[in-house]
Amino acid sequence: MGFELYDYQTTLKSRVSLSGIGVHSGSPVSIDFSPADPDTGIVFHRSSGNDEPVEIRALASEVGGTDLCTILGNPAGMHVATVEHLLAALASLGIDNVIIDIDGNEVPVLDGSAGPFVEAFDQAGIVQQPIKRRYIRILKPVRIESGASWAEFRPHTGTRFEVEIDFESKAIGRQFYAAEVTPELFRKDIARARTFGFMKDVERLWAAGYALGSSLENSVVIGDDDRVINMEGLRYPNEFVRHKMLDAMGDLSLAGARFIGCFRSFRGGHKLNAQALRRLLSDRTAFEIVETGRRERGRSAEMIAVSAPVYAPWMI
Image 1 (cartoon, rainbow, N blue to C red):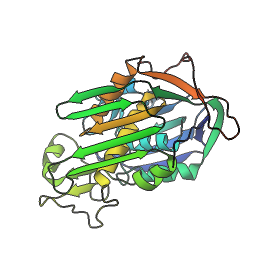
Image 2 (image 1 turned 45 degrees about the vertical axis):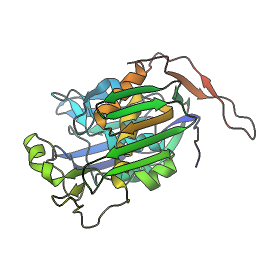
Image 3 (image 1 turned 135 degrees about the vertical axis):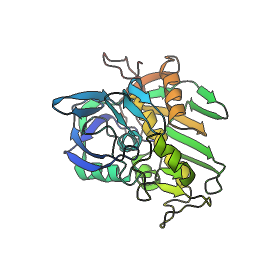
Image 4 (image 1 turned 180 degrees about the vertical axis):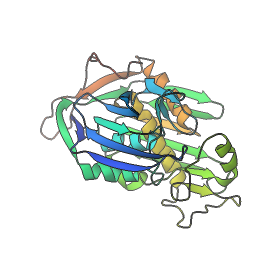
C-alpha cells in the first residue's frame, strides 16, 4: 500500500487502561490513556505519591537516557523508561494527541511487542479532530556514524524505514527489512515483533539493574547454544530486525511530528536513533514543516510549507 497523508489530527475516542510489569525494573505498573485536545501531543503524567503528577512530553528534548531502552525525563529523578514500543504504536496508528497517566517509572512490557498497545487503542477507538496535522519533510540527507554503525535520513515521498542488523549470533545473523509505513502494515507485519536478548548476558544485566522483569513471556531469548529457547519459536522469520524497526519508529516519533522521508540504519539502536534525530532537528536547512493543502478530484493532496507555531516541538 502506498503512502497516505492524513489531513487532520486524531485522538482516542475513549479512555483505556493497561497494566503489567517493567521489563527492566520488574515492578508492577498501571497506565491509562485518555483523549486530549488538538496540539497537545503525547504527554505522560507521572504520578508521584501525594504530589501533583509530573508532566513529561514525548519529545526528543526530553530524552534522558538510551541504555537498552529510551528514557524520558531525568533517570535519577522523575522519568518514564521503555517508551519505544508504546510510542511506535501511537505513531504508526496515526494518534497525535493523548494524555498518558502512569504510576511507575517504566511502561509495562506486556508481551514485549507493540501488539497489546495496538489492541488497546483499537478498543478505545480513534477520532479525527478539526486541526490540521503537520509533518516534517526531509529536504536533504542527514547522516551520523558511530564505528561500524550508521543512521541517516534521506528525502522521500512517503514515510519509509530501511533497517539492517548484523549479529555474530547464528540465530540472528544479518537481517534487512524495509517498508513504507501505514497503520495496516504496522498491525500486520511489525507490531507483534518482540524484544530479544541473550541468556549469556542475563547475570551481567541483573547486576546492572536491568532485565529484572524479563522472561520468556515477554522476550525472545537466545540460549547458550545460540538457539531461540522460546517454545513457540518466532512470530516472524525475521522477527529480530522487525523489532529493531519497531524501536526506531518509536524513537523517531519523538520529533513531535511524523516525517516525510526515508530513515535508514545499519547496526542501530536507541542511542543512534536519538543521535540521528537530534542531528536532523538541529539543522533547519534539512527539513521543513508542511501540512496538506487543498485536494482536487482525482488528485492526491499537495503538501504546503507552513510557518512554525508558537509551540514547535521540533525546535530543540
